[in-house]
Image (cartoon, rainbow over all chains, first blue to last red; front, side, top):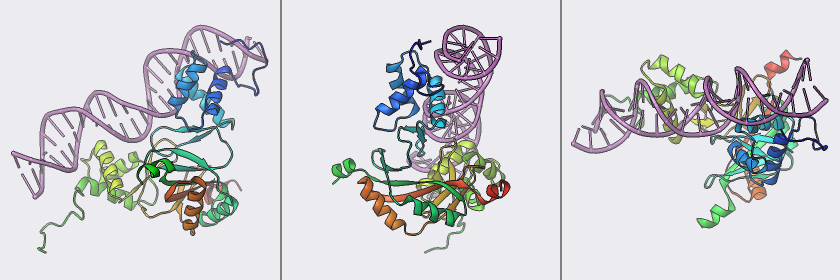
Length: 138
Length: 138
DNA sequence: TTCACTGCAAAACGTTTGCAAACAG
DNA sequence: CTGTTTGCAAACGTTTTGCAGTGAA
């Protein structure tokens, strides 16, 4: 296992493997699947295994360092942005981009009233055509 | 138009198997997984197979008769309600309920402006605690 | 006949788990 | 030492697919 001579852990349990997974996700602007994270993490830590990537993703997720999103296309995706935000999905090319809608407090309250749930969070998903695809088909 | 002797098909391609799947979904108030739909369809048509249920679900979905939803807990769920609506998920028991938020036209426009997508639809997901769970822990 | 659909089993995915070995404290 | 994490492979649950057989037009 890697030498931990220095103080390379910013949080308890943040092992080199988990670090590699986290770095990979933070280095990307997109929302990679677990497989893509694995491919990237391999370059950072050639000895890392697939199972460890999955374990790390689970750890990082529950530690609040990354976020998991799944929009029903098979594999889950991972998001470096952990603050509340919304997603837009291109129905043409599948691209997934972040955006943030203001006034979500109002939304939360309205949704809670309609559903009678005690609200915790709201998430909005927009389906549409991204600028790139719109340009192509214009 | 001539009276058809056996008018058992309301749409072209709506075979008994697909009918059974559709009936099962329409008979339920919840949002069953494919496995649950299969279990229910079996009672209606004991000879139906798992693969046919999946094929039927795909067919019905693209025919616009049902809707598929997936909120990242493993299996997809199927919704008899095809009109635009939103979902609330209980973080305690996993229950999934429908509700409809008004003024989604405004939301759509705002989300489109923020994301620069050509909008098609918006969907809102609320996470929180359902009335039943709230009562239990009160 | 032609064509679409079924049913079965097997494959294909994405993900998790059992376990022994390696490590950290 | 004890508890945690790794890596591997095998298992798992969900979904799709290949293909022969069936049934309707």
